[in-house]
Length: 245
Image (tube, rainbow, N blue to C red; front, top):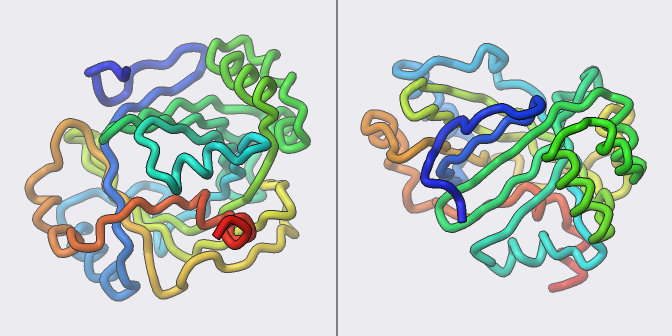
């Protein structure tokens, strides 16, 4: 059971932990530009989020039975996902992240890794985590080793971000979503990816603690009818999706 304490819960051995609520919407491209203009008047733009945003690339891991994928598409209330994330091929580091969902709460723990350790994980050498001297790294090593986790999909997209210090609110717009199920080096400049979502649609995510600020809620109110459980990991598994269904 998650603690009732929300927000940044602390840093231990460079591990960051955040507990918050998240809402997701699928909106049209023109709605994205409209909401972006409205939010820019009341929120600050993330310092890395100029223009149409910055690049995010994530490698998702799953066990041999694709348990995390199946639990997501079946709507299991308590579930998790493990990913390795960087900000494009020029990155010198990556973050190992474990996201756990329970009801309306999302807990995310992350640990920065240097490029060599990240490449070890991409190759399936999880013993590199034992060198981190971190309880979180040890936990991830145990999960990924005992349950035979393997790289399954890379998902890349551009993210535009607006932030408010109150309740640590983050509004993100993810677009130009593409991916690969065959090549997993997130540091590669030659990674071949294909579109995995409608290029005229954008994923809006609203992340906050306790309650959503009223002036932000008013702006995104028009998106309420499109709230849905969108998973970029599941979008990144079209081959598996076709196999199961």
